[in-house]
Image (tube, rainbow, N blue to C red; front, top):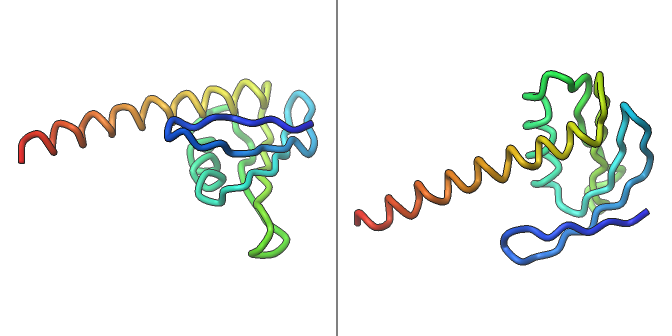
Length: 101
């Protein structure tokens, strides 16, 4: 099952769900930076039991692995919303700082 998400910078990133059940997700992401950001932010969610990424070879895309106490999909979506909010705040702070100069 392939899914695409659109980032706010108008670039598309392909995400492929490798496996899923209620508490587990394994996702192939074509961007290592995004995989690391998600991994780090997922650990801030209390329902996360495992958040990691791995790749078979540096030329291959990373796989994000998520295991939760509850609904893994819900945890992932909450984390993505949290990242979006942080990014919006950061963007506003940069805009304010640039206007001062």
